[in-house]
Length: 239
Length: 46
Image 1 (cartoon, helix red, strand yellow):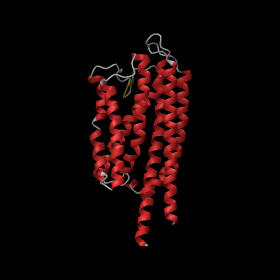
Image 2 (cartoon, chains in turn orange, blue):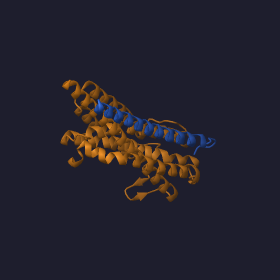
Image 3 (cartoon, each protein chain N blue to C red):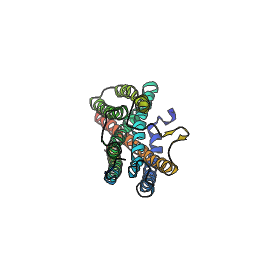
Image 4 (spheres, rainbow over the protein chains, first blue to last red):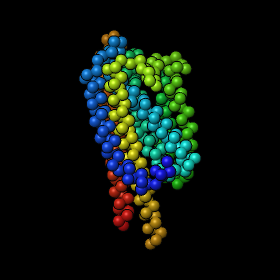
């Protein structure tokens, strides 16, 4: 892992990888969403609204994966002082927040025709909303630390503590009564018919590749800002 | 699904929101990356 701690080595890998991830992700997502919108069959109980699945589930996965990435990178930063770990955590925050908000919005749009309401204060929806607020808190805290020159360990601790919410979101539909359905997918198990399952896997793959490309782009931006600032400071000291 | 509610406006709104938000996120992140890397090159050249 420390082999990748070198920013120059990171950039050598990230430069060609960023456009590849973004372009392949957009192509796969476009194909999967076209399938979801025009070719997937209507579902027996939910009718046409089931098409929202191809947006909602990848957004939910990436909302939670984004925070899991923040927590993992925070752990690496706190334990091993990996120089790129803080950048990876900060780079995951905005895309994670966007997909978390997209999960809530698409879920509301699905809830209105399916449940008769845009919102209920049940365990799944509320814990997902809490995750969105955690993202806002992390983004604000990381920006304040960078602006004021504080320790990057503070957002890292916040990132680790916030990870408590991830299993709560996952198990909320099992622990508490909810309008939200229980998980349809598990490790090696699926309660979903093939036309939905394969389309969903494709859209999840496409959105995940886009997410990875965006994280790399944001890490490169953060790294370039740090390097430019360090260079300007060094030149100011020399002159 | 509840009777009497046309599902298509909800489906189209969800897709428009999903595609729009993703495109804005990608464009913003790419633009921010290019701008930051340009600033670094300018700092190097000074």
